[in-house]
Image 1 (cartoon, rainbow, N blue to C red):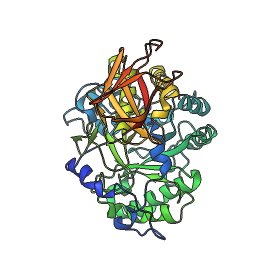
Image 2 (cartoon, helix red, strand yellow):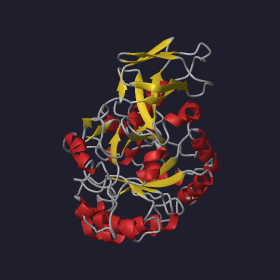
Image 3 (cartoon, one colour):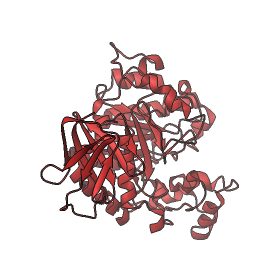
Length: 460
């Protein structure tokens, strides 16, 4: 994972793409044509997905827990080892030399990755209980190691070495058995591929494109999530040609969703839905912005995407803040793709499992205000209230204990206005104010929830 480049204003300038226009006939391999294809409705309805970073880097499972956001990514272990002279990278080499010895190569970790406790059915059940509607697995990160038996990566894939198993295929089966959508992260570039370093065109033609098409035709993903695009423009990656094939001739042409990471010029400008990462895009803070285009925030529960054994409880986001992150993201029109980093043996760390189940508890009660919802005319009020809308109703979601009274300034009640509380029986008493609504919180309301969603009908 990495974010860089120009200004956040590209997000707002891209508002012209906000209203999708159905492409007429076949999509052409040009951004003018590709950008007219709308993101499938299932993606905007889903709202919450699970990201999974799992690979050879899960064996050392280390990154420092301080410094810039990018220096805390454990999945960048191999790259950081070979750039130890750069600021923030030295700790990787010091850890590696102390624990494994300077003569140990990153490649030596691959046979140690056994995944002996990997249970994809248990993973899928957890994701369902968490309330997720889609899953995105790293099929190949920047180290080039594939989680499926790729012919283009002989002896550097999970069937040939390490787990000796089609990790991706097994998860596809389990996730779909639970009724969830399944997608793949795929890194366009590979740090140390000799072919990539010597001849980018041959790498794209002989390695990358055949590999991506194999992934799509073999597993028929609902989503393709590319990354590692920043070295070259999309024309060098032949991204428009691949996307035209994906949208016209692939087995998932009508349903697949894609992101915006297709070349150094495309993020927040071209492709499918836009992506932010720990609230950043182009190194600019987008955590408060309303992005006039389908979009998705991705981040880990801690500071890393891949599992980092150095993280402590203090590095993990508390449940109430994760709930608020989800609510705030949806209120601003986006999806949340929350990452977990399984251990090398295939276990999902218990603290990550707990956080997912805590999110699931919130969504069991309040999912009506999240799934299928869209951004209302107002995002929220102050720091405690966020709005969503769905099927003509407006949902005011209050972070934490609401107290005895909630006053909302934005909604303007009409004569048929009604207020209810998700998860509670019957209507809720309210009165009209010149500046909005005064809601009397039911005395029977149970304390302890992370947020409470009031459903408002007959308001504008």
